[in-house]
Image 1: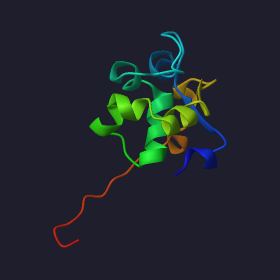
Image 2 (image 1 turned 180 degrees about the vertical axis):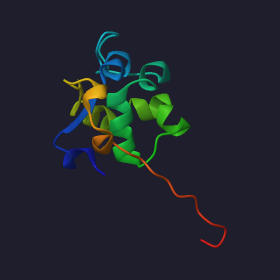
Image 3 (image 1 turned 60 degrees about the vertical axis):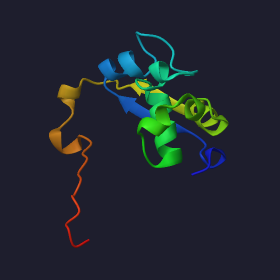
Length: 106
């Protein structure tokens, strides 16, 4: 995915996640330059996941963090705290992730 093709990304997270990794209580997440600033930075992690289809050690290298495409896209990522308590969300509405392991024949 090319950063110019993405107008905006919005990610609504629980308050604790916003405070810790989204730019809330513990400060801005707008300009990571090093691994220590990027690895707990939802804006960067979302941007680089969209660009590279993965997040791993390579995405936490300074050259990748500082790359123009990653920096341009993270400027268009908005992380916001959810306005309701996670306890008020019905279980059927909660996001879900599933993975299926490959079998030896596939």
